[in-house]
Length: 347
Image (tube, rainbow, N blue to C red; front, top):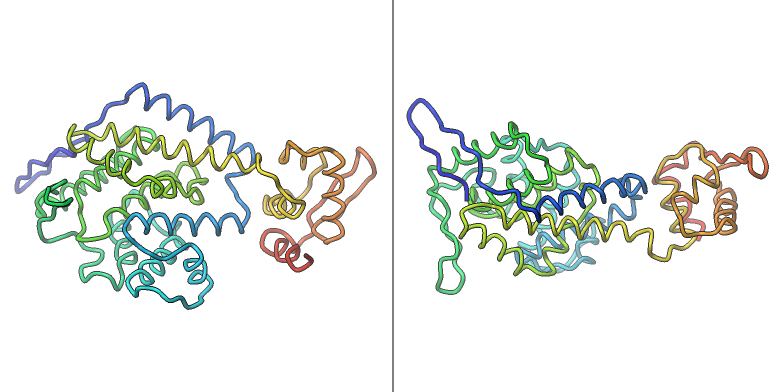
């Protein structure tokens, strides 16, 4: 729980959100750092366009599902492809807004309160009147007949959010922890009439992206949506303790599991097309068979040779030299999406 500010006419007392660094937090942060290293070493921090699209759909579906949106992943895919779908108008608008937000993630500055309000305005366009503005009334979260959470008075919200962004800019804490603290404190402040949950998850993603690009395509919301009770339990536990420690432990666990799932990419059975599709997206303009096998560590040298031969047939790359002196070069104009489209058109 964020400490309420003491406000006078001429000064604002800046405070640091309360939390503790427990052994569990240290253990998780260390393991996450190791996994991010594995991700970078495996080139998985730059997933191919097809995987990026799939993960973007999962992120949007999961984050909105937590808030009660009923559209399926296939319906979201259709909207992403500018197709019409049948569903509640509100749910369709929520998805379209989220698609716009995630298409422009890099346009937002995670440390800017102005950017934060701009994102909320886009996220809630056509859904509420006061989009992009802090609430002007008291709010609480009620479960059944019990008030689960009573947010701070609305006239404190601007100062509390200013304080929170001050922490984000000035704290020397690592981004992994800062992102969790921001997420929890924003949920506690509940600065908007609606859209607080999806803004908390969105902004945690942006904070993490600043340090670790892989988070742009890591759908950790999927793990949250699969067991929403644990998400709300972590928020509630932190409310009761008056500090975000429990929520930090929970979110680091979610991030850890998400990275583990991503690293399982190399453990799944890949087809020849999957491997070529992925490798071309890495933009390695010149490489050897050994370089190819270093990305796909479980294939034999014979399989690698067959893959590379197929890549040459598809005009994805050309080779120079013979035997162990062979060098492969990506053909200009066939990298990234062009290459993948070319593969698809041949199968």
